[in-house]
Every structure is written in structure tokens, then in C-alpha cells.
Image 1 (cartoon, rainbow, N blue to C red):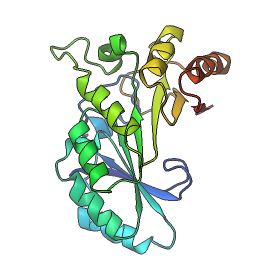
Image 2 (image 1 turned 180 degrees about the horizontal axis):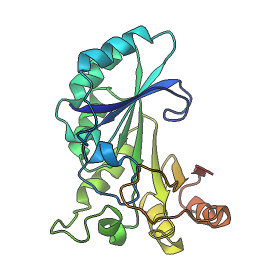
Image 3 (image 1 turned 120 degrees about the horizontal axis):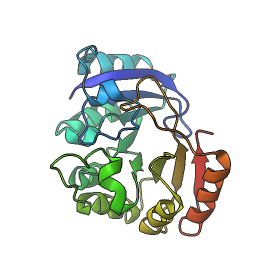
Image 4 (image 1 turned 30 degrees about the vertical axis):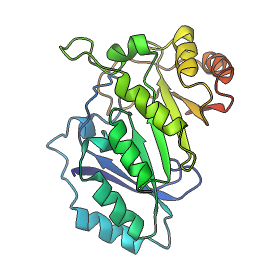
Length: 235
């Protein structure tokens, strides 16, 4: 597994916990608004961390940290992800997984093995706009949403692990109809967060903007009709 980034302490990435965040390299999407460009493209400017180095760090921080967030990139692309999570949990940590939902088999395996304690899954857009939103509209790859929908169902039909769905809302990519379609897709979910797009130096493609707070509030109201626990982030 290529770990290309480490945030040693965060109060934001794992709800209710002081955590460290590990960023794994590579992704099967190219969301143009993604702010982890170097991680996704596995820039040669980034030096991978050795697993032993990460585990030593976490061992020393057990009195300060209670959780570890695994994000990326896309962690479920790595077949050795369960091995790493098992070692982290052996240190006594809670584990949060961030995923785009394209590997439902891996997600189910992690849940069955009790290797994750919280899962955040991105819902990029309404089904008919997924390709353009994940950066595949100009290539030969035609995204099959079956795997992503399967991951949605996996999370919604398991009773043990808290989860959330989330969408980074971008002015150029999301409108009222899209938000209605997404919330109908995940109707009855435990939690849904609309995250306001934030521009940064690390964005994959420039030229995107955030909706106004008023617009985001109106979108949240639409979504609450289908997911009662809908809230805004990043304002």
C-alpha cells in the first residue's frame, strides 16, 4: 500500500474523535474538483511512508489519538488494505474509511471482519451525471454504477457500523434536480452531508466555484425530504 500523506492530528476527519489521517495514493476517478491532486496522481514529489513508520507513529500516539481515518485517493483499490487496518486496530484505534464505493466486495469484507468503525462514502452526483463528475466523460471508460449502488445498499442494510453519504457540491456540476435525484437514490440513509466546494492550490482542475450558502440551504431542504438527517459542511 502506498501511503503518500499523513495528517498527524485532526478534529475534523473522524466525527467525535481526535484522529490521524492516512492518505493513500491513486484513484480510479479523476474528479476535476478534487483537492488531492498529488495524492490521486501519485506525484513523484511525494515520498511514500513505510508501513512500519506509520505503525510506530501510531503506537506512540495512543494516549493522544483515538481514531485513524483512511482516505486518499481510493483506499479500497489496495488488496492489502485489510492487513493494514487489522494492525491499526490491534493498537487499539477506531478506524474510519473514506471510499468512493467502487469496490463493494472489499467494503463488505471490511465490515464482516469488523475492521472499520465508521464509513464515509462519496456520492458524486445524480446517476446520469456521474461520468462527467468523476472525470471520465472524455475517455473510453463508461462507468458502471452497479458497484456504487451495491456499496450504497451494503452500508444501508448493515446495522453495526455508523456511516454517512456525502457530496461535494460544485456550482458548475450540481443543480437542484441533481440533489433531488441523489437524495432519492439514498432515501432513508442514516446521514447525508452536503459539502461546499472549497478552492485550493491542490485542485485537479481549476475554474470551479461554490454555491452560495442560500442555495446550499435550499438543496439541504430538498434532501431532507428523503434523508431526514441531512446537514451542510464547509460553510
